[in-house]
Length: 157
Image (cartoon, rainbow, N blue to C red; front, side):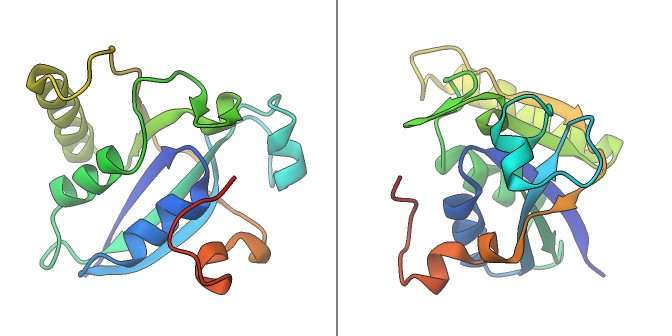
């Protein structure tokens, strides 16, 4: 039986590629979550007015990979101290966010965030939002496995 986790960590291309490499991840799909517009397009989200974040929805087998392991991939693949920005990408669609699908995920995400803050790994405060999952809107096909299609291993923007 699989479970779902959803993460926003800036440009979804590199985040999706990172999750696809994890044993126990059945699928990782780029999309949008957290906004007020139904069925948004990439162009809509890029206006920074829909409230959506670029996210990756991960389908995983909890018997093979833990939610904590997925959280570590999330933390390791972006800078959670930059509000509404990842590298050159600026806007609320690039915010750092963990969308939880149940109370257990909420508790684990919050614990992971507190542990990371206490670790001293980052010198700036962590701004990652932990929020209830909303409707997931799948991104356009050309965004799916974007880097893989181009033979790249990470996001070049």
